[in-house]
Length: 491
Image (cartoon, rainbow, N blue to C red; front, side, top):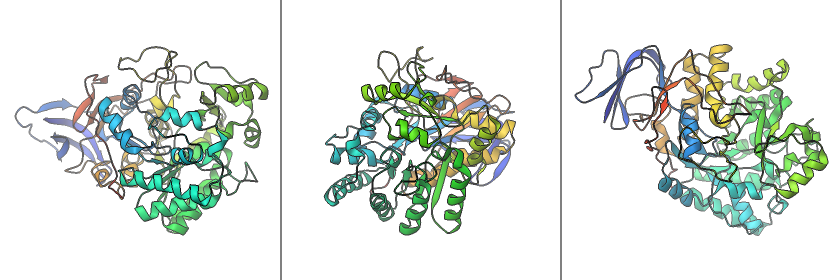
């Protein structure tokens, strides 16, 4: 199967190429980039003049494990969607389930620190489902520190999944913020030994909780320096809030000292999680300068009125998904804080995309357009298009080569050591995987809102996954399921 993309502005962040050229795709790989390429016999020719052609976006932080969710991400320019912050366990089952169901996009998983701890400390056997993760997040039984025996047991589970092809270790430390720092250091040592990254939702900052066992961002810097592990700081915007400048300074100093610390952000002033999460406790909200009214139930739109109602909801349905507003996007000062990590050198874009939930309790649909009534955070549908709109078209903080570096090239490089298959992603050199996005630079924008979160982004004209068209002329191809697993080498 061959396709020739003719006459677009081609950007390859791997080589720095930026010019009008043709791209020839053969059997799932990029075989040539040059001006005036001849179309081989039987080759499909797609006119992309006036459009921008680059490597598809690689999302390191997607909790979407469904055809429905991946289709929304495809319309946002994503070709590889990986769950690395939370991960799934057992990872072998996670890969098998995705393969059986079929995926429009490439997929992959980390070994789940949270699931491993819950299995040992709670007896909650992991079943490779993200919904299971949500149900235990608010349970204090897994949030406590571990005995030496327990620590050894759940580290062994992580080591088992690394040997089975996990892409590193996902650490939901912010959901067990009182656990002993020695445990996190033990995870970092395991990751360093295995040559695999960690992906961490950090614990509270000292400005928020002076009693925290360790400042969340300083902890990553110290662990990276002490162990040599590659350590990725997840959604730095949502965990840092108004203290983002101090946190970015910590990470900058860590990197300049030689530590392997990477960082991600998304362009929204509200996050989303289960209402039972430890940091949505009324007392912890106060520490953040927030209130119960900062919490909105995703499925009903209810804005929590007061502490009593919040406690009631946390007790009755701790897995209920909510939006947590941490910055006001209508306030210019907060908006500047929200954009500062995207300006920060080397920050990659990652969505923290969530499953789509329907009123009947389902999390999946093969219909397109999606059935009405689905709820999720708008970042599931619009993270990358919104970032391009804000950073390239409106603020001009990035040019197009920098956009592809942040959305495609740098995310892939986080994975190079653990997954050699990643080396063919994030760029368009000859032999690269034909994971390609074609964008209308004047039209690309997000369309999803908090009130209507499943509206697909606009401006992705074509999307190829392993050379197979998933989006053609702006329309989703409902018959396309070319996604393949991205796995780590056995550790």
